[in-house]
Length: 158
Length: 114
Image 1 (cartoon, rainbow over the protein chains, first blue to last red):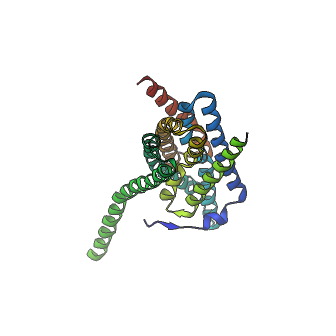
Image 2: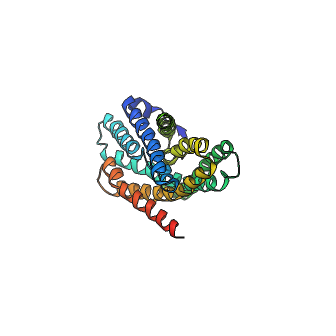
Image 3: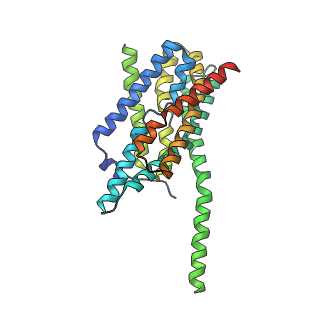
């Protein structure tokens, strides 16, 4: 499947939904700092990978996909939930990149300039996440091609 | 207090930016990658290194690895449940939060013993 831009989600989303994500994002950043101050960086560091806006994002995706279906007069409950599930599966792949990001920062930040390490680790996160996504897509793409060819063969055969 | 306010604003802005990128991209599985972007880490580690030094940031990053593994199990579980069962996304994602805490703190405890 090709990667592209879909602006329809922006039209369906309300500013309150973005405010909620801003609030959760800001709040968990503060909490991570407070926990680190109180219990030390070993505990505070755990919250740097906390799924802070995950519930808000999944709910938003479910709602938007459901509304899209219902506009066409169809029931969108299942479609909405499945879209949220697929998005969560993508986050699973992103979390492997997150692990690599943390590993790089842990190893490099004491010896190198933080303003080079952090953006560099960010690029590595993106590369790892996209690579895993690409690898996961390949068997599906080849299965689709085989199925397409098989159905063409059947048509020709008839 | 001012440091916390800066953390709140920077954290909120970075998290919102990645969420917006995720909203704009398709297919959904690709957009989902941005749900696990190191947004909180970027907002926090930059400020931490400035105020507390690189060694402190390195310790945080080490613990973050346990948090990232916990994120992996949490997102996998949430995706599996939503795909196979008839529960609302909010109920699943909030209901699975104890899993993140259990895995993150479990791994952290394990790491402390090693």
